Amino acid sequence: MNLLSQGEGALFGDPSSNRARQFFAGKPRALTDKVMTVREAVSRFVHDGDYFASGGFGCSRIATAVLHEIVRQGKQRLQFAGHTATHDFQILCAGNGLGRGATIAAVDISYVVGLEARGLSPHARRVMESGEVVFTEWSNFTLALRFKAAAMGVPFLPARSLLGSDTFRYSAAHAVVCPFTGEKLALIPALYPDVAVLHVHEADCHGNCRILGTTVSDLDIARAAKRVLITCERLIPNDEIRRDPSRTVVPFFCVDAVCEVPYGSYPGNMPYEYYSDEEHLHHWLAAEKDLETYRAFLERYLYGVTDFEEYWRRCGGLSRMQELRRQELLLSRHH
Image 1 (cartoon, rainbow, N blue to C red):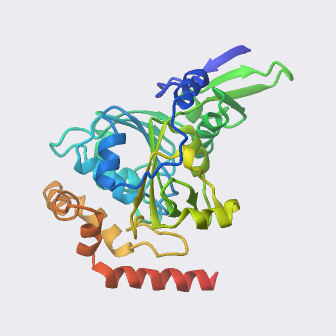
Image 2: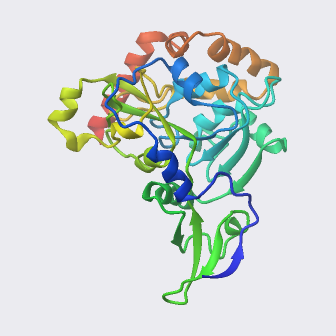
């Protein structure tokens, strides 16, 4: 194909489908019990320097427990897919700029720093403005296309998106002439994360997963990532999975670890389960404005707890979780 131009951004990750296929060919496919704690899953499967992808959408259905544990264990120099990333990016930025090293070293950006209508994260903004994190820009759609290409096992996908924009200039996409039509197209490179984490409604011990509601890019991420960690609201028997296999959206052979984490998306929303804790999210944003206040906040809610359950108990405990369940139920009925 005739190359017309290319973006100035760095390409993070190897888009080679052949090398990815070699890795996946050696991945075990036995129906083994993969249940473990979040601490064990992060220790075993998240390594310094990995390219990391976080599922969900905005503050909805994010794997908060794993994100906390990554920062708590001091994982360093991660590359990150900033695809609809709000509170998940905010959590990871807690590992930068506070004297504990740098959790994040590079970001493919489509949406980071902002927590949607809640406002910008002051600390995530400090991290991105510090110059210690390198980044390449994409649109939400083209970053999703990168996962799609990887899930399909091809090194790129063609698109019209980005062409004629400054986002193309700061991306790592290429503009080419289509060999069939002579039209100008952007080539969007595949993205194969080293490790990804998804929070789901239900999973069995082998990693077969059910998700209620929108899945966004999670099904592609599960097939694109070399290692996949699952947190779930509930562990269910494999017999239940077999009763209705059509509800399984992530199959076991994609999954490396399964962790049962009730309220695992807190303080984010879990569709049909519980609403987001807007008070706590605003408390987090307010604490970030002053570094000493933020250090004390993190010591109380992230570094000073042993696990995720202790975190949400410090945020109001079971009574608060039940109230968020009532809010979600009322909203579900209304809609």
